Image (cartoon, rainbow, N blue to C red; front, side):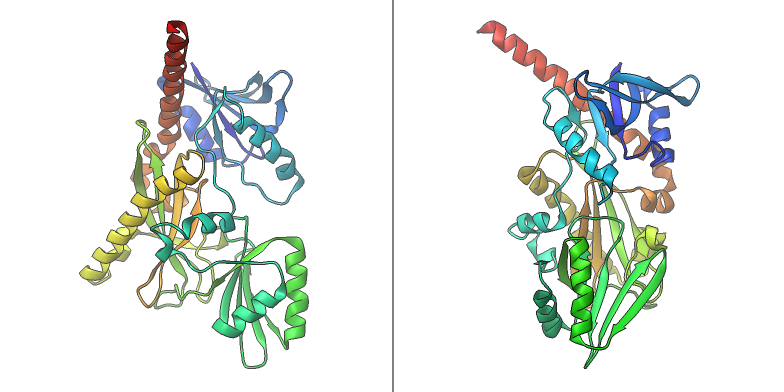
Length: 367
């Protein structure tokens, strides 16, 4: 049996997804474990966590050697658990005897610096690191509307819309599925707020893009790409995320909803629909090889694509640990495919590693 480990920051994270994966593993010759990276003993190379019992359809507490194939589903933040687990995962990734399904991507700013010099640069909003408030004030004077995003982060947390009025400044964000607005009467008050914000996290700045529909709801297209059991990239599916009226986020965690891509595209003029689909196909074909050339191998990518009111197409975010809710809501027939995908690719990697080690061994013997 091939040992397949799933890492999360707590043992209750993504339960439904992980349980479904584990329930399909044994017929493929895989044994599934789940654990928290901080529960690894670096001296004995064992972990404490849970092992899936295929016959009982349940998990049991277990101590086990570190699985040879690892699926990292840790979503790191600024909390102590993340700070404790991150260096351990980095150490695991450096080991030649372990293989990760995907090795992840750097933060949004590092990603932009690489991608802006490639064939997809035209799809990227201009992105600046904001290390002091003068950059924000300068860009606001020039563009009137900007977006601030944490350099590291996901699910839309910590995103702010800023607008410069004649005398005041309007700041808007979404927290706990509610739109929150604040008016600053002058530049001094805005700067005080920005300094407090930047003291907690690192931010980047982008122009505000008009990405709402006719009902003034923010929306975008989520495209999920994954590697097959042969290790080749392909699209699993796509869906439309729609946010609340007057909001700035389409993320499901912020209260967004989902509609099938075909429902949305069929409402467009045929030539516009065809153009958008061609652009998505181009982005989807170019992005994975560019990223894998610049960084380490990946298994899956969630690409968020925005369609501006002027017809421009933008890559809003690229996530190497995408969720599946958009596809599960819009294409429920993909449920089994999505749960099998990590197992099939993990098995491909395990057999590939065995063959490479066999070839290396035979080569050393012949010399």
